[in-house]
Amino acid sequence: GAGVSQTPSNKVTEKGKYVELRCDPISGHTALYWYRQSLGQGPEFLIYFQGTGAADDSGLPNDRFFAVRPEGSVSTLKIQRTERGDSAVYLCASSWGTSGDLDTQYFGPGTRLTVL
Amino acid sequence: LAKTTQPISMDSYEGQEVNITCSHNNIATNDYITWYQQFPSQGPRFIIQGYKTKVTNEVASLFIPADRKSSTLSLPRVSLSDTAVYYCLVGDISNDYKLSFGAGTTVTVRA
Image (cartoon, rainbow over all chains, first blue to last red; front, side):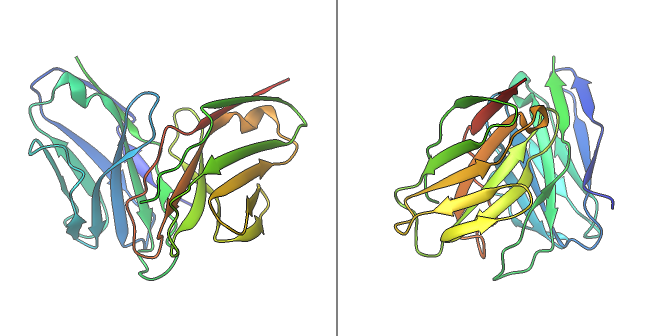
């Protein structure tokens, strides 16, 4: 079956540019998550969607980062005025979103962002 | 979220059993213990989850002592393809969606 997919797999951009990273969750999953992983570290939470709304965006590092999920399926992470420190692997995960239950998150392969 | 401590790296050989112990001294009553595996250039993959005693699936076993202050992930008869980073996570999975990953344990399996 189809898992979580992310595009592009690699993105190289220049400092100051705008980038968009796309995530296609597993069909039927209502919950969607973005994480960021720096080299040698574990993933760090950025934002969580339940349906179309961002239920928790407390992990976004600053206002240059924004994410949307307009139809409750595909999500786009947007980064404005990119900085070299934004270079990392951006991971997307999805889950059934069942509350009060053990809700396993399934991760995509990630998008490796390099800001020159 | 309960803080976890696990070894930075472990080496093993094909066919051996690998045991990774994770310490979580301040685990809360509602917390579960979850392990993820991550291969290079891939996202983390759920391996196993447990609350107490022993849990076994087709991939691994998870041993949790009565005080729940630590847990051990056991990988039986590893192969080269088990080389990966293994993360121990502790949290109230029923309402804590923010998975908190540490640096993990890099397991290297050699021929």
